[in-house]
Each structure stands twice: as structure tokens, then as C-alpha cells.
Length: 309
Ligand code: SIN
Image (cartoon, rainbow, N blue to C red; front, side, top):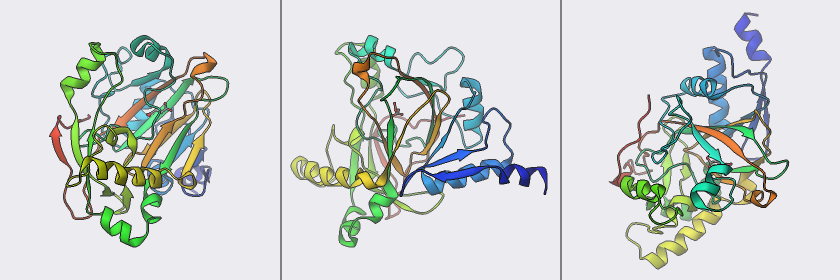
């Protein structure tokens, strides 16, 4: 056995739930990973959609180096103005900040099902989230498998949904006149994405619809606001059926790596009242412009592509 084979044979991939999620053991994210290990992780990501690592002793620098093995790393977020010094790629998800900027306690920036930054014409391909400070209990995150959600639809509904284009836009609950509100208004991210997107690496179709960025406009191209909302409510419910989900209990040093093309996620809102800090750090990989079943690509209404390096 070569050194690489030995290393691969000590890595474990343990599925976490019936449709989504797997925990990877035997990988130390501080190490310079061989291309075989990177391929194993990439394959697991495509297969399980979200993969988890536990007890990782890494900081911002190592998280960025790990992310770069899988693609270009974007700046923290189109609206982020205060990333940690020296690390413009890191988005802090920090309950202490929300209390300051939003004036109320919350443990994540969004407590609805969403896929990261789909108001962009090229939403991130993947996100990597590392936990640092956590409440003693609560504050879990859930993910749902949007490929399974698509496959679970009856064929006639799939054929119909394949033809739809949905408006995604960034809205904010930030205080009127706040710096955050101004930044969101300036960037004004609005895009029509196909309701069903074809994965560029696997060719699989996913139901690319979740409430986070689509409920503000609630617009399906060609349909009235009322019909759009009713159709979207049906699709959101299908996308987030409990059986397609996995729920992850964080501990300091846990890392979740998800395919942002085929999943949505939910920061569960059950910990703000515990009055405990919750701090995680996220990086995102540059994504491509999604393609629908008919081969058409998403159309930007407003806002620039979000590019990494
Ligand atoms: C995110 O939506 O990227 C963060 C999820 C979380 O806070 O659990």
C-alpha cells in the first residue's frame, strides 16, 4: 500500500440521514491534503450534499486554505463590511453582531430556509461553515436535499416546474437608514433563476427554490403575484419536507461543507432566549450562473457577478 492509499483507507464516510448528510472521519483539515483526499471529499459532497467534520483545530487561515482546494474563494458576502482583520473572505455569523446591528437577539442572520445568496446571478457553489462559540444546547442547523425534493415530485409536476423562472431578491430586516440597509439597497441584487437547475458537475436536477430569497418578490415569471405565491408555497413545502433533511448538532471545531447548488439550509431559531453567544465563520466558493432544464441560464435584473480568487 502506498502512503496515499493508506491515508484514504483510514478515512471514514458515515451517512447521517436517509437522503442527505455524511460525517467524514480521519481527515485533519490543518494538513496539506493530497489530491486523492480532495477528490474523496468532493465525491462525498456530490453524493451527500452536506458533509461534516468534527474536532477540527483550524482558524480563519486554514479554513480559507482548505476551501481553495475546491474552487475560488469569494469575499465574505456582497454586503459584508467588517470581516475579521486580514481575512476578507471570512463572514462572521455572530449573535453579538446581530444584537448591535438589528437591535435584538438572534443566533444567525436568517432563520428561514434558504440557499446562500441566490439573489446573485452566480450564487456560491458551496459554503464551508466552522463553529467556534456555541450555546450549551440549541442553535443547530438543518439542510435539505433539493435533488431528492425534485425527484419526489410527480412527473407531471416536474415537467411543469422545469419550465418556471423565479425572481430571487435580497431584502433586509435592518433598521431603516442603517448602514446595512444602505448597503443592501446599493447592491440591489435581483435575479431570475430557473426553478429547476441542472448541476454543472453531476448533471442532476434540483428544485432550486426556497423561501429565503424568493418570498420577498414572490414572483414566477408569467404568473400573477397571487398565483406565484401559491405555487411557491407548494414548492417551498416540497423542498423542505422533513424526510429530505438532516439536522446537525454543532460543537466547537465542527465544520459543515455544503453544495449550495443542491441544498437549502435553516439556522434553527431556538437559542436566542438562552442568552448565550453563538459564533461561526463561513467562507463561500465562487459559483457559476445556473442553467435550467431548457439550457437557458439565469438572468440578472440587477447586481454584478460575485467573483472569487
Ligand atoms: C448560514 O445560513 O450560512 C448560517 C447557518 C447558521 O447560522 O446555522
